[in-house]
Amino acid sequence: EPEVTQTPSHQVTQMGQEVILRCVPISNHLYFYWYRQILGQKVEFLVSFYNNEISEKSEIFDDQFSVERPDGSNFTLKIRSTKLEDSAMYFCASSERTASNTELFFGSGTQLSVL
Amino acid sequence: AQSVTQLGSHVSVSEGALVLLRCNYSSSVPPYLFWYVQYPNQGLQLLLKYTTGATLVKGINGFEAEFKKSETSFHLTKPSAHMSDAAEYFCAVRTDTGRRALTFGSGTRLQVQP
Image 1 (cartoon, helix red, strand yellow):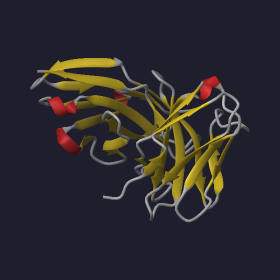
Image 2 (cartoon, each protein chain N blue to C red; image 1 turned 90 degrees about the vertical axis):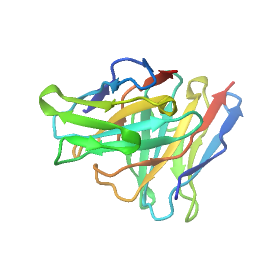
Image 3 (cartoon, helix red, strand yellow; image 1 turned 90 degrees about the horizontal axis):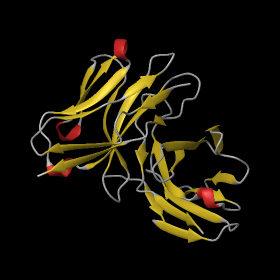
């Protein structure tokens, strides 16, 4: 069964360092998303992406964040200068369509720890 | 803007007992409602969704949920809990206007006691 794949599963970094979280969405999906979950808190929307541009982003997704589809299969989230409060589980998701009744398929997440 | 409230961050039931996980939503337009489950060390998996039509929706693993507009609720139930149901459950909402991203509740961790 097709699935969304995320790497690495765990990432430890020092405050101020740049990190890139990687995702391989399901191959025929066209819409991509990043969510995050800080320990003990809600799963929060960060950004959605379609046709090589951001379609929607939340207040969390500030200038330190960026997303890219560098090739036909990968979808990345870059955090330029990590802060302690960026420590969270980051989930990538994809969907066939952008219609609001469409299911999102999620990866297993990358646990980011900023020290 | 839409939002979701899940009552009870932890729910514990005995094996074979009824599972009831509560979800209330807030939306000024017709919502699309979803329940996702997260097993340990895994991603979020769709259990079921309500879009339009029948208000009682059935999902995987024997779960079902009923959309009640008058109560703005979408509670998740299962008649008989199995040990394998132990997981975290998330209710989520999307709409066709405004913020279209999937908005999650804070989750409910279900424990199943033998």
